[in-house]
Length: 169
Image (cartoon, rainbow, N blue to C red; front, side, top):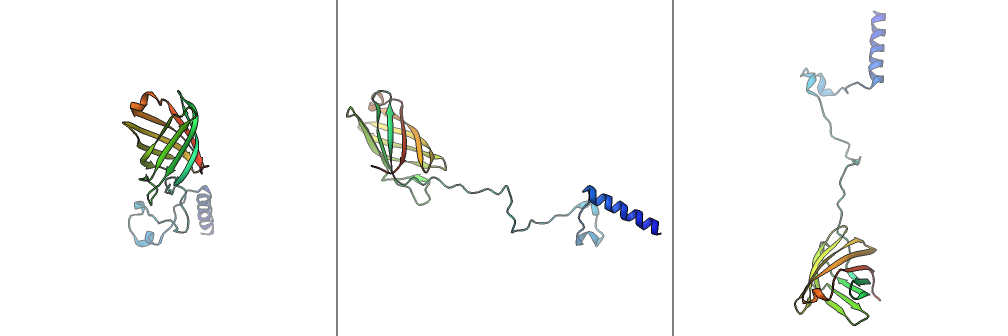
């Protein structure tokens, strides 16, 4: 009898050290089918590693300035004034752009669009049948992007890019 208990203890110890042991739960002793399995909820105080973090749209509200480059006019100054709605997802009325080049060429007007965690997209009007659309990517410290002009000004402004940072001179 003592030998049988010793062998049983050794067998259990071997199983435990091999990691192939199923946890015993109180519900296991009620005589139900033992092959049905069991489950338990995680401890609420322990964060799960795959928990998704909500990423907010960039906060670009305010004045941003920097450089604009056009293939025909070269380098100039770019200024954006962004107004965002309360959840920061939209560039709303009150937002505008202003591009100026040394040869007196310019484009300015209102814009509206959407903001994501990595940038913004917009459409607007530079007046006199000149519509614009564009996008920028980056973060809260710098944005780079492109503009596309359509209508009468499309022959004047082509392949326009910009690079801006928060603040205006």
